[in-house]
Length: 206
Ligand code: PRP
Image 1 (cartoon, rainbow, N blue to C red):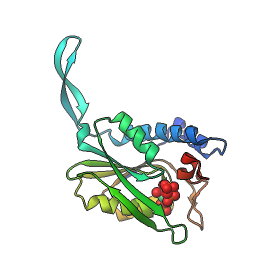
Image 2 (cartoon, helix red, strand yellow):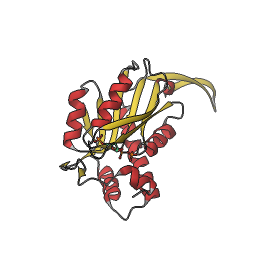
Image 3 (tube, rainbow, N blue to C red):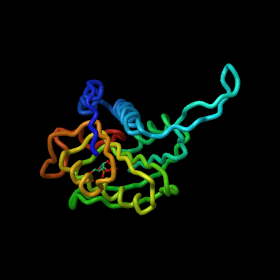
Image 4 (tube, protein in one colour):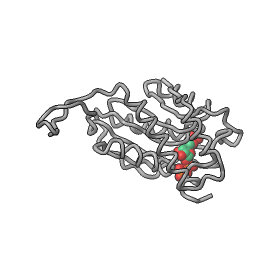
């Protein structure tokens, strides 16, 4: 299932990201805000448990997400602001890290770091702002699937229709929540109109 956010605030934030005047701090901040929108949507059917707390009227059990059942996995480096934002909303969740670099000649992703926690039976929120060819996302999902999670949900800020379709066809069981599906993939595999390279924009390595 692919779910694209449609609200006007999302569109406004995406335009801010596209704007070349937006510096690294503003870029990361906006990625973080969009991530929170995605997390709200992605967890809308997540079961609630009763949490024992002390309220102003004494002890009681109240609804809460069972955060330890959730793992947030980021794809470095552009996914870092998304991970930080998701973990602010879910402070009890567990974080996992994958580092992938897209080879700009072959356009294939290369895994160079894997620090996934135990994923068995957990819900994994996989965060990466960009879905261009979809290759990195497909490979990351395949790797996480090999660790037997209960469910994988992909959270992306921007994608090409081609990339979204590639991930959807390769992994039909994975839900994709995305802020914006853009017009197309360019011949040199960039999202158009896109944002530029989210990693470079976030960390001043343009
Ligand atoms: C970008 C992005 C994705 C990937 C998307 O990372 O963050 O991981 O490219 O491209 P794909 O869908 O064609 O695989 P990049 O390789 O630029 O690394 P970075 O995060 O370090 O900038």
